[in-house]
Image (tube, rainbow, N blue to C red; front, side, top):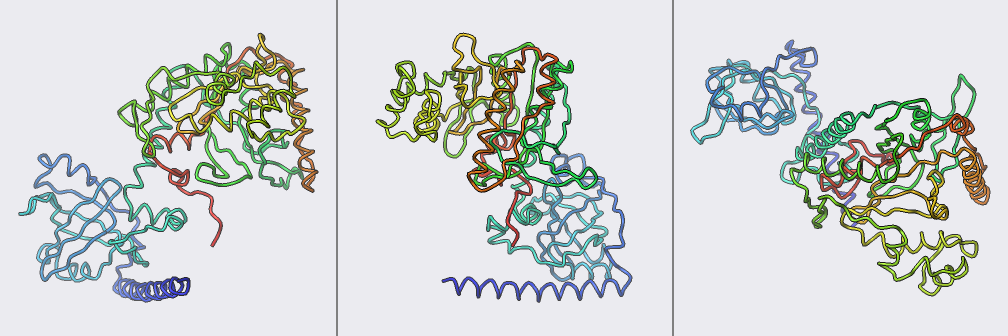
Length: 505
């Protein structure tokens, strides 16, 4: 089997090389005749294919200038047909020798599928009723030296589709729809936040510190400064510095880099939206994110009920809201408030075969988190907000005044995935430093245990900023790529990233 696959691949490469050789010879002939397509610097396009289709009655009989890639050609004696695809749609072109001239028609007959052409002609409808352009001139604007994948099977290999996205977009035009929607999602998100008084900002991608968060950063080196630097794993700390500085509402749509695993919902570089608002709390951010997601769903999908991977997702407000303790009790029967102490919690975890990573050092909070991950997450298909997280896994969230074992934090879930994370932000610099130091110590200890240097450190400048005073603040962040996956019904994050990270061939 493997030998047959290898043999077929070798044959395909040989065929492509032969076709490329033929096309190079055609190019040489064009250049020798003074018709080098690469010397053309401009072609005036005045009409898009979709506009011809949508406005045929107005354009019938009128001259238009269009351009695009030739995806089909049927050459006959004195007249031929071809299809030209621009970035909006396809258009049939009728090319007649008597109209374009004998020399031009002879050249046209040598053009290949994939060549980029400029057409000037008038709009008409064929006897079969198809809207078309009757060419008066045909110009080769760029030569395709490599053949496109055969139309009857197209480019189906997903690995090659991701590696050669340009080819994927050429032969699978429906792929463009996801990326068009992605752009619209970002545009609508900006409009939504701008209309509510938020200011979009940019913060540094290169950081001089490896902060204590659990994510592993990419490391680089700054030659002029002579120091190691790290690509950011979040935008949070700089955005909160701006709240300290007097901006009441800020957000950033930015690229994030994490040197970690890859799967259908994780890529080493991805896009997040983080937003911070002074004088509100996590309940204010719950209302905001629910309103934003409902707005985007209606705007992008024209409905509040969408289909994602064969599940009907109802985005309509109000979303279900449960504390983590309530969710665990609902789906597992375990009652956090019945655990007398940490040992009792660990005993119930053992009884229900729940793995708790912290082992015999686990607290009630650690056990609650483990129960949630084991029994709850995969049940959260419809939009659900889970709030009041244990302080053990919420180093940046404010403690609940009524129960300091918990923090004012929530995450929201759709289709079994965590879609975003939010806090009533911690603004006590003493508490923040203590949590940072514990986080850094744990991260460095794990690195040393793995035989690596422990280089994480506390961001002292951020602590200094808090010492000047940060107002009560609500903060929220979510992965833009996962949102796009949801609203385009895409199973993999690679389907919504134009150029996902791939291992070199």
